[in-house]
Length: 251
Length: 362
Image (cartoon, rainbow over the protein chains, first blue to last red):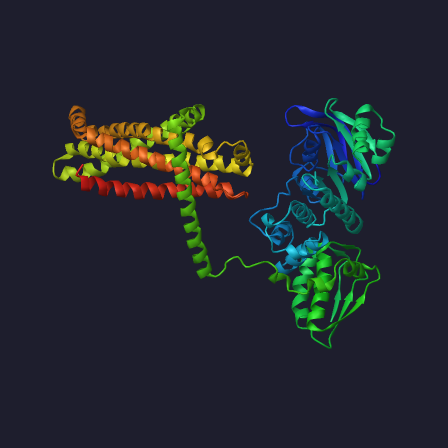
């Protein structure tokens, strides 16, 4: 076992009925920005859904800070689920609530804080992502990038140790996407949160990732693991080389 | 006053501290000093930070001083991350109050109804033009879609139509037989059921079911297509959404309604015979009265009403679908508006039919 591991994925078969990934194992360390990458349909989001306990994996074990998220007893699962926040691809903000109410929702469910304290915590989370002045706005009034930032504020409401981000840059322009990357790094540095991010945006990977793993659709397996620069400079196989070469052509 | 922050400033601990301390803090004023002892804090989450910010916010607002013992730098770190000037207002006033003034709500509702009526009229006009153009180019009608909607709105609805129709006839017979029996004319219950079902209740109950089943489905289907930008795609292909999406549904609803209505009436007649036979009226007598009461005019008027109700359900469902807003709750609202709008129009037009038939003496 890795000493400072916060997430351990062991011999996991990922998928709903038939596996899209087989025998995947890796470890996420405390305080790092860890990126899961791969082409479309390789099982990145499926693996993420297993990691956050939405669907159990077909085989194997996933532990969040030592607690089994998929097959453990209910108390262990609940403890594991309190340790992370998640932002989904679309933001998944509740349209009938203001940003403040969206961020307040988990505080209302899980803490006994009085109302004004909840509001202040929510405001401070929005301040962290630069949206305090939009606290009374509804999600429909915001741009795509602002919605993503608000979703991050909501995911951070309970001060999780781990933040899962599912394709945070999807549908955003490069400038907004770069702003989001800076926010992720700032949250890691100021809040000490470990970030697990699913993406295939190469610019984001090089901007934020400490380490990454690459999944492959054809072999249904984990084909590379390491810092992005290392994978780019010394690709272990042709698929990784092709993935990162496209980056070289783009930039 | 002295406040010692706990070693673990988690949400649970802060909740207790907040409730205990804030009333006393609220009483502090200029000249007072709050001694904040944060030297033993080892863990401080967002709630702990919020407590620190709230104390400093109140200090700035109420004028009391804070003497801070911050050996581990928790307070300094929080104040570095969150500028107190940015949190000057009371947090409980940040969220807007939803219930705006009643007069404003009434005004907005009136404007909404007016806008809705204008949109419905515009849709009606466009649908009429599209239908007329179909007369000249019938090949433009999507026949396969029309048949599909005919099946969904018609054949799939048959079980519920038969059940409701049967129960309606049964209930109608029970209710009227009790009164008719007092005069010894329970055999005329057959006439009441036949005329009532053919002219009024058959088309009406069928239209209500169609509005609930298919009117809402039309609005939801088209609404979802609008949210998914499929309507925009159709427009860029120069395929008018009304001709492509609305007309097949409207035509299907108009054609299927008379057929469904006949099924509802027949089921109702069988419900009636069950009751009358059970109270001693021979089945042959019942059917003789039913046949005598089922005049051609009664049947045709019922079918005409059914077709008009079907047309209204199709029009209202499709128009609300096309007017769906591109928000998550837009589709739900469109489906609700389609059902409510259909029911209102069905009732109003039924009233108009009654007046018209009375004036025409048919």
